[in-house]
Image (cartoon, rainbow, N blue to C red; front, side):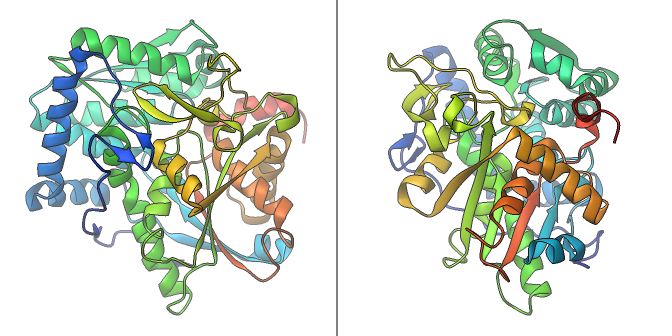
Length: 412
C-alpha cells in the first residue's frame, strides 16, 4: 500500500533553482523591509546558501528528518476512496511526521541555521498552530527560547495546539489587532523581529515574506515532493501521477510538493486548492491566487486580496491555516506562467472532504488538506477525468480540528 518503508534513509536531492536577484520569481518576490532588517536578511541568505551546499549540514539535517521527524513519510494508496471517485488516489502522508504536519521539515532546518548563526531565540507566527507547535518542538530540541505569535481568533479555535506549544516551553502571544488571525500574527512577529534582530531568528513558516524566506522554506520543504516523485514511480511502475494536488494558504506544503515535479515531470498537472470560504461570490474567502491582485505586503510582492484603494481585505476560511489574504510569490509566478493552476473549495466542501476521507480510508485529515480532498471529490469525472491517477499531499492530521468540527457537525 505504500513505498518506501518508514525508517529508510532520507535522501536529499541536489539544491533547487534559486530566484533571480533579490529573490524574484518573475515579477513577484523581492525584499521590501525596513533598513533595520536588511543585515539580518543578508546574513540569513548567505548562511543558508553556504549551509545548503555543505555536506555536513545536509547530513545533519537529513539525520534529523529521519530519526526525529520520522521521514520518509509513505505514499498510501486509497483503494476505497479511489473506487468511490473513479480515480486512482494516492496520499503523501505528511500527517505521519512528528508533530503531525509538514511544518517540522522547515523548522528543523531553520533551527540548525539559528544555531549556526549563534542566535539563542526563535520567534514564529502561526495560524492553525502546526507551525507554532513545530517551532516550539525544535526550540525544545535545540535549547532555544521561543515566542509564538497567534491571532486571538486562532488561539480560541486551536486551543489544543496552544496547550501543546506551552507544554513545549514556548510563550504564546495572542494577537488582537486587525482580524486577529494569521495576517496579524505575521505583522506582530515582524515587528518583534525588528526590535530583537541581534539575538533572534524569525522562523517564518511558509514560502512567503521577504527574500530569502520563500526560497529557503521551499528548499526545506522540497523533500516532500522529491520523496513523493520517487515513491510514485515505484508504485506506478516508473510512471508519474497525472495530477498532483495540494492545499494552498501561504503555500509551503504545496510548494514543497510541486518542487519535486515542476521541472522533473513537465507533463504532470499541478493544482493548488485555496480556501473558498463561504463562496467566491460572497467575497468571504481566502483565494488570493483566484481573486487577488499584485501588491506588496509582509516584505514581498505577490497576489493579495485587496479593495479598490489597495487596502488588504480579511480572508475567510474554516481553516486557520488557510485564513491568509495572500500567497507565496513562487505560487504567483507558477500561476502566471501557467505551470500550475489554482482552484478553490468552500468551507462546506472541506468539511465534506474531511468526512469522506475518514469514512473511506480511516484517515482523519486536517481541515487544510481536506480542502484538496473536497475539491477532488467535486471534480472527479469533470476537471479530473475518470481513471486518472492523482497524488494529494495530506499536509497534516485532523486532531487539532476535532473540537471545531464537533461543534459544527454535532452528533454524527
